[in-house]
Image 1 (tube, rainbow, N blue to C red):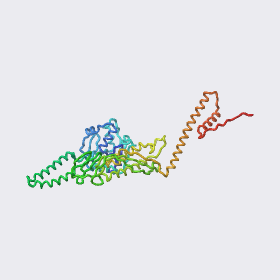
Image 2 (tube, rainbow, N blue to C red):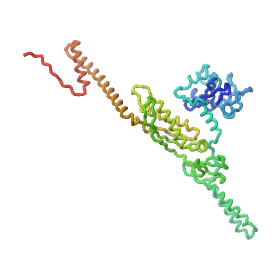
Image 3 (cartoon, rainbow, N blue to C red):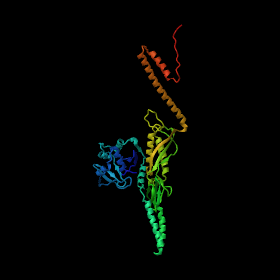
Image 4 (cartoon, rainbow, N blue to C red):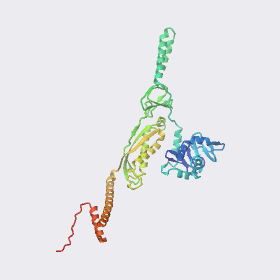
Length: 442
């Protein structure tokens, strides 16, 4: 996607659930009004953006830039002394460098000094939550194009029992035509085409089970989605479509995906085996069927890709006293990030990720034995440290009690010998063998 101001390329970033683009050359920020509303809510903790935005917006009759998304003319909108570009077709906003801080200074409940767009992002965005996307912004362009495609909407339907009563009246009318053929000439002749029409209309009766949906097409075009368990009547000219072939329903139930274990190198370069389980469900049937070829395979491929990218960012293990996150020690945080990243990867497929968890985590077989020895060595070292720390405390306590509770005066050499003997006894793996020194001369 090209910036309409300087013809530079946009880089895409994701902050929490906010998607925005920054021009490489002029630092202009390009984002949707809905994304700006989310950012406003995060900075101000208020939910009155639409009311303030619509009341302060004033259109200026000036030549505007072309929208990088739909290539239509954008409108100049004035907020006090801040002029931004707005596309009424796709609801995208374009902020020149420095305009974002001016804009929020008008809306926020605290004073925001004027700064460049890059400084604003560094100041008010949590940098750890910002995920850079592909350099050329192509994925964001794809999102914009997909948003112009089909989205789920309700299909035309009638209550099945009401339609059945109408069908019975229709049958009664045909029977009446046959009966009255002796009175009304040619009445039976007209009944035959009505029979064929009635048989065709019977195609519209549909029964749906709980957590099922029926995607309908009419002469090749999406006609809506039928949801809700029960007896329905739909347009008999429509055909059901379930992705692989015509006919059949789509399950809306929560499903489980387990791709099997993958061998991936962690941040330290150690090969490890990782397995995850994903609980997901179809949220938007139109996107699931028309935006991707096979949404199940799409989810499987994206899950593998996201898992590899995340595992490479963390070491398998880290010391207990370290602040470094690891795959073994911070499994809850890693699982939350997995869920978030997979959801972002499949957002255009109409899928909802309910949960994602690591089910298997181990060193690969070729280094498992060596890593086990390393872990055992670290455990022995930690145990020895604890023993030594405890022994030193005991020796110190013993010396202080001897000097405080007895009349024994210990010189430095005696103290050193006592400390040496006590440490040997306390730190040894075996029980001490006392040696009695006898200085009596016969």
